[in-house]
Amino acid sequence: MADMFDLSTTDPSWHTALNTALSAMSPAYLASLETDAYLPAKAQLFNAFSLPKSQTKYILFGETPYPRSASANGYAFWDQAVTALWSDTGLSKPVNRATSLRNMMKMLLVSEGHLQPEGISQDAIAQLDKTSLISTQSELFQQLLQHGFLLLNASLVLRDKKKTLDARNWLPFVDSILESLFEENPSIQLVLLGKIAERINQLPIAKKYDKLVAEHPYNISFIGNQQVLEFFRPFHLLRQNGSRGQATG
Image (cartoon, rainbow, N blue to C red; front, side, top):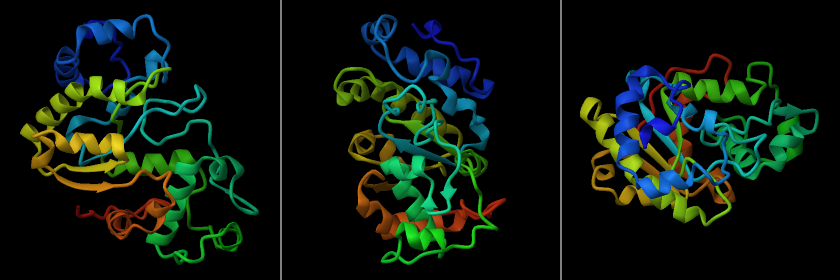
C-alpha cells in the first residue's frame, strides 16, 4: 500500500524508512484515504520529511493538520496562510487569530527575554524594537528546520472523523519512524505537545528517547510553562539568523 503515496517532496534519505512505516499501517485504513477527503493535500502529506534524516535532531510533534486547506501544508504548527508576524498594533491579525501560533509567539518572546510573562499584551508587543527580529512566519519555521526540527503531526491527516481515530491509525507509522531514527541517532529529542501527541510517549521506543512533554500551544498555560521556555530559549528562533545553540530536554 505504500506505493499509493507520492514521496517526491521527501528527502531520499527517508524513502526506506517511510515505505517501511507505511507498510506497518493498516491496509484497510490506507485504502480509506484513497476515497476520503483529508488535509493536507496528498502532494503535501509528507512535507515534514523534506528535512534530511541525518540533519534531524529533534522531532516536534503536534496533534493534527490545520482544518483549512489554505493553512495545512504537511508541517506541524506551520500555517501557510500566515505571512507577516507583526503589525503596528502588535502581532499581525492572522497570527493573533491563530490561537496556537499566537501563544507560541508569546512563549518565544518571553523565553528570549523580550517580554515578561505578566506583560504579553498587544500593546507591549507593539512597543518592542523588532529591527533584529524575523518578520515572517516562513522565517520562523525555516529557523526550526535549520536547527534540525522535524515538524511532524501525531496524525498526518485530518478528516471529517474523530481525530483520535486517525491518530491511532498513524501510531504504527510513528513507531516505525522512531525505531528507524533511534538505530541511527539515539540522541534525537522528542517534543510532544498536546494530548494526542502525548500518546506517542506510551510507545516502548519513545521511552528510550530524551523528551519534553507539554500541553498544546492552544492552551494559554503554554506561554509560561518553564520547561517549554527553557527548552526553546537557546535557539533564539525570533532572532535574525538565530543562534545555533543546543537545547536540553
